[in-house]
Length: 71
Image (cartoon, rainbow, N blue to C red; front, side, top):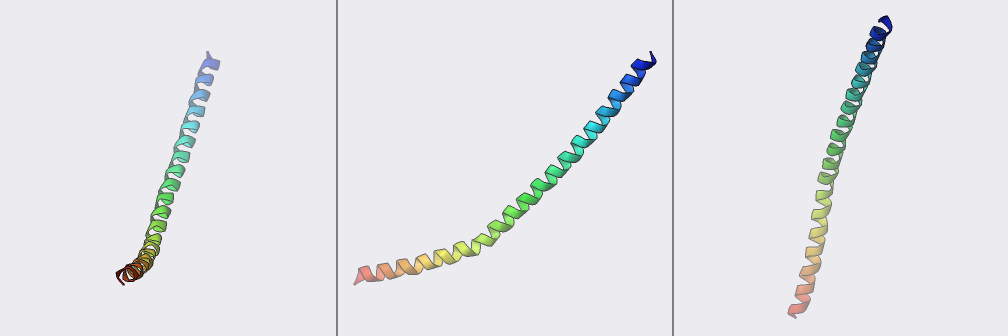
């Protein structure tokens, strides 16, 4: 009888430890995912001025082409 009780206690201890480790690793993955989202948003906002300057350069080129076509 005592072996059954000790076995049940050991199973419960291992279950609690594994559940705790699962929650800790899940929390770490969630934090890493949130950080990655923040990095992607920062990268996106850094790329917007580059896109704007590219569009302005293309606009200048198109204006030049249309001016040549009018002549």
